[in-house]
Length: 250
Length: 225
Image 1 (tube, rainbow over the protein chains, first blue to last red):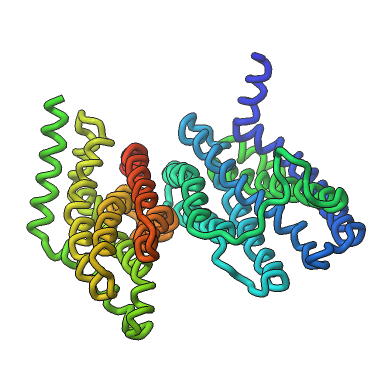
Image 2: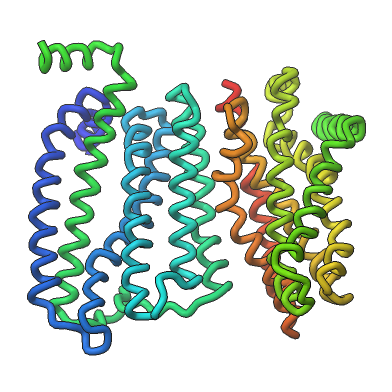
C-alpha cells in the first residue's frame, strides 16, 4: 500500500508526468485509430440495417459514445479541478484545463450527429427535447469554463477560479438535467440500461462498445498531450523543462 | 455571536445606504426589465392570446437579463475602493458577510422586479391568480438569481470584459430557476396547481443558500489573493 502511494505521487510531479505521458500518448492514439477502424467496420458493414430506422441508425455509433464522453468528461474535469484546488497539485490543474476542449468537442459532435439523425427519424434537425436541451447547456458550461480560464492571465488564479466554476457546474448538472426532463420530454427511452440486457442486436452492441473505447483512447491521448504542453508552458523557467528542451533542441 | 450579527447588520445597512445614494443603479435595472417586457409585443404582434401564452417565458427571461445587468456592480465598487479587502480581512466568516451583501443586492434589484411584475403581467393579459403565482415564483426565484449570479460576479472580478463573461458563465446555471419559475405560471395558466413548481423552487433556494455563499467566498479569496 505504501509503495502504491509513492508511485502515484511520483507521477503527479510535473517532470515525471511529462516523461510518462510523452511515452504513453502515442500508444493511446494508435489504439484509438485501430479501435475506430474496427468499430466503424462492425458498425457500417457487419451490422444489419435497423428494421425501423433503416441505415440512419448507424449515426448512433458516433452519437452515443460522444454523448457519454461529454458527460463523463465534465465530471472528470471537476474531479481534477477539485484535486488541484484542494491539494495544489499542478498536474491535476493541467489535466482539468486539458479536458475542457475535448469535452466541448464531444458535446458539439453529439449535438451535430444528433441533428443529422433527427432529420430522417423525426423529420427535423432540432427539437426542444429534454436530452438535447441539457446537452446544449452542457456545451455552454464547457464554453464558460474555457472562456473564464482564457480571460484570467495569471495561470494559478485562472486554474483556481475555473475550478470553482467547474464545481458549481457539476453540482448544477443533475439539477439542470432533472428540471429540463420535467420541462419536456419526447425523446425515445434509453436502449441500454444497467439492470437489463440491451434491447439491441449483439453486433450493434459490439460496434457501440468498440466505438466507445475508441473515443476513450482518443480522449486520453489528446488530453495527455495537451496537459503535457500546459505543464511545460507553466514551468518553462524550471530546471526540468530547460533540461528536456535543451536535450531535444540543442 | 453578537459581533457577527453586528457585522452582518452593519454591512447590510452600509450597502443599502450606498444604494439609496446611487438610486439610478437600481432604477436602471428596473427600467431595463420594464422596457424589455414592453418590447416583446412590438416584436411578436399585439395578439392577446399569443402574448398571454408567451408571458411566463418573456417575464422570466427579462428578469434573468435584468439581474445579469446588475451583477457586475455587486463586488466591483467595493473592489475598486478597497473595502472588499477589509471585508476579507474581517474576523467574521466571509461566507456570512457575503450573504449580507447579496441580501442587500436582492433588496435593491430583485425585490423591485417582484413588485413591478403585476403591472407587466397585466400588460401581457394575465389574470388575478396568475399574477399572484408570478409574484410568488419571482419572490422565491430572484434570490436564487442573486446568489448564483454572485458566484459569477466574484469569479470575474477585475477582469476586462467581465460583464459579458458573467453572462456566459452564469446563464446556463440559471436554467433550473427559469424552468421552475416559468413552469409555475404555465401550470396555473393551464388550470393545474403551481404547488409542485413552487415547492421545488423553494427547495432550490434553500440548497443554493446553503452552497453558493461558500463558493462565492472561495472565489473572492482566489481573485483577491
